Structures are given as structure tokens and as C-alpha cells.
Image 1 (cartoon, rainbow, N blue to C red):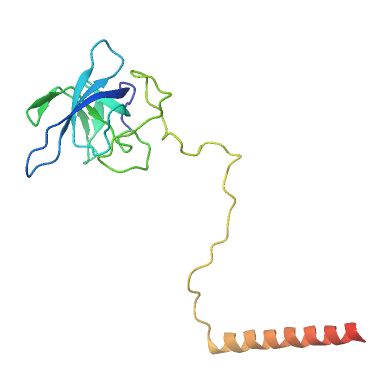
Image 2: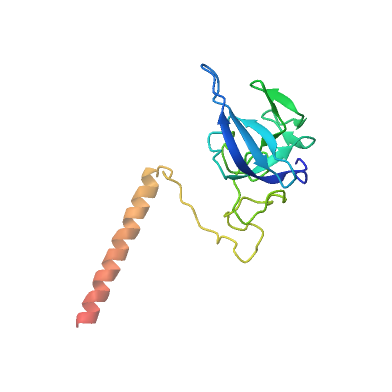
Length: 174
């Protein structure tokens, strides 16, 4: 698990479209991460909107790439523009669910520059023993085929049960 303590919540202040024909549609975003000056983040994440609150990995922080290797974020030119950070997706944050390449959004209650939540916002708590899911017996979709002997035995039991029910009904009527 990667150290997410250097990650920050950022608010997108402006977006400039830098799409090139044939390539990924890039967006150059000015992001407030709680400092005096906003940072510039270049992204291809499709869900980035003006005033979105997203998790940012600023320069110097470490992320896990698609190959599962740790990678340090450096000030890098992306699409000809210097990027000073990276928007994190749910997998980078260890939230489990979420799509790769979709920037992780957080509620408005998180201030710019604050640490992101440790679990996905709105997800049900998993550590409580009181909310443990009761065990449920799951029957297979298809049960094993019965042999001739087993079928005969089962039919005999059903016949006896019907006969007993019929006799009990007769006894109740008289």
C-alpha cells in the first residue's frame, strides 16, 4: 500500500481544453490545493469539471501505476504543458471500487489542501462487527442429477407424505 499522506484535496478553478486530433483529449486545470498559488494539472480524466473537488497527488508524492509499481510524481511536460501533479483515481487511493482513469471526487465538506478520506465517501462502513452480514445458505443453480434409486426413494417419501396428510385430514373431519 502506498503512502497517501502527501495527497491533497484540490478544487478545480479553471479548465483549458488542449485536445489534439488523434490523441487523448487533454485538459489543463488550475487547481487550488490549499497553498497561496494554484498548481497546474494536465489530465485526460473525463469527469473533471469546474469547481470539482478531487484528490491530487502533488509533486514529490508517490503513486502506484497500472503495473503495480511505485512511481514518484515529478514536474513533467504533458502535451507540451508543465503539470505539477496528478489527479488520483479510486484504485490509487486504495478505495477498491472505481474505474481507472476517473478522478476520485470528494464531498464539498473537505477543504482544499486537506487530506483525502481514507475510504470512499458514501461507502458503507466495513469495520463494524455489528453490521456483519448474516450467513445465508446459497443453493447451487443446478443440483446434481439423482440416480434411479434416489429418484424412487424420493417418490416413495412424497407418496407416504401425501398419504399421511390425507389420513390426517380424514381424521380431522370425523
